[in-house]
Image 1 (spheres, one colour):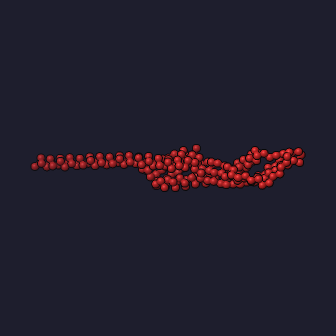
Image 2 (tube, one colour):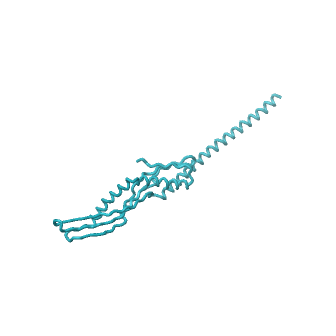
Length: 200
């Protein structure tokens, strides 16, 4: 009787051990598989972010149009020979990220969260879009060259740029860059987005 009970107990114990081993194998196998699946998803998500950023390449996030009037005067021969020009010009200054593909991307939390470090925002261009000559007086003894006109405009351009930067133009460009990237990444399916700018 005792032997029969012992055999029955051994059989039940053996079954419990086998079932426990199978459950453990199933648990760790599924966990490993889930981790691998998470890694694949993370890699795919990183590739997706990079592709989206690659489409932007250069990202213009702020633009300011300005205009100014300059006067150029030249005199010679004891003040008798005079030449002057009054010129109005219009310029456009743009700021943003010159190469957004240089961003550093880190996807985590099984592809649901992303951290991006963007390159610093900078002035991308400052171009003259229009030049008008309002008034001019010419003397055959003294002339104002095209080179002199452009040199004067260029000097005033730099002054205008400095004044625009003092108004927080680059900070505005940074804020707009964050909004654009956030909108793009939320549309791509990320739940958590952390954006910062490179300190260098």
